[in-house]
Image (cartoon, rainbow, N blue to C red):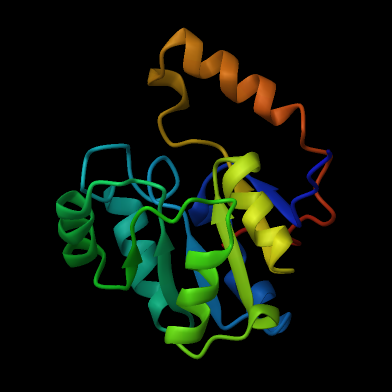
Length: 168
């Protein structure tokens, strides 16, 4: 199996929001840990918090996380001020489909953004969403085994279909 994200970028703040809007994207589904915030932190980095304020002016934001800890995820929902779905079981599509339905979002108007090819990108591709693969926020602070597993997982990725014309 080869996964081909639509875009590959270093950090969520590198997304060209104008380009996504021009493609008809109105909603952004984000993975949580290592995409929007460091794992188990419950807090956004300042640059990502400021960027999300800009994002919310144009896009509907939803978080789909495989994290199974509902009390932690409730705190995250307060921090992010957006719908958060815990225990999403990505790449299973059931929770993502539930989020689409509950928020009246069309798949063709949605992008899935995350740091894991075999969960985030795969669920996005299964639903025919635009997909954006980001480097993990804490990649330099992970254990050797996690770094190894990420390297193995990235072997499933072929180059992105497109690159953003400029970063914003």
